[in-house]
Image (tube, rainbow, N blue to C red; front, side):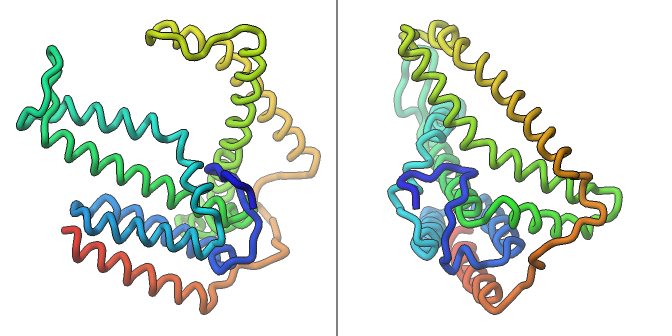
Length: 263
């Protein structure tokens, strides 16, 4: 195991969560996300948070690492909280010039922040416990009933590659930042405009490297004879077993309790 997993990175293992069918995990994540945005009470958020933490324990992943992997999302959570705090009208809590923080804005911002954190954590558990190949096969199998007009294999491949590139781009950004700081770049300057200018030496090589990696990946896939999903066979066929049925029943029970307490 790795000490600090990130979204999109697969951690090999033999836990009950690893052995679930990828289609089951994708469907359960979709149901969890739907219930997460339907409930409004804090008791329901507590049930859903306990369910995610229990799933992390069942997957034999370090809780500190899973939660630490959410750190890149904290800026978005903070921005969501601040925008709702000053944009939602209601009873004033604090006045800073033209900006008025309201009680209703604080409550809404906290709810959205908790929803975002729980959603990202649940999505991270999916990618941490599902290999890219299994995830691609699962998404393709779920999209296939939509008909021939929907390129199920190509869509599944694109989504999987996008998820897989997240940790790669994060590592590349950290490496470029360290190299630029060794040459005297300052990424923590005061003022938004200065910080924006300081990001230019980071963003330009990051985008160039991303396009280079995409081109190398396309060449590698063509060299190996990749021609899409037509006529493609699989070494391992997906099968839904008893553990998948048990996972569905347990998740349905938890989500039912959350809906009961959260409406």
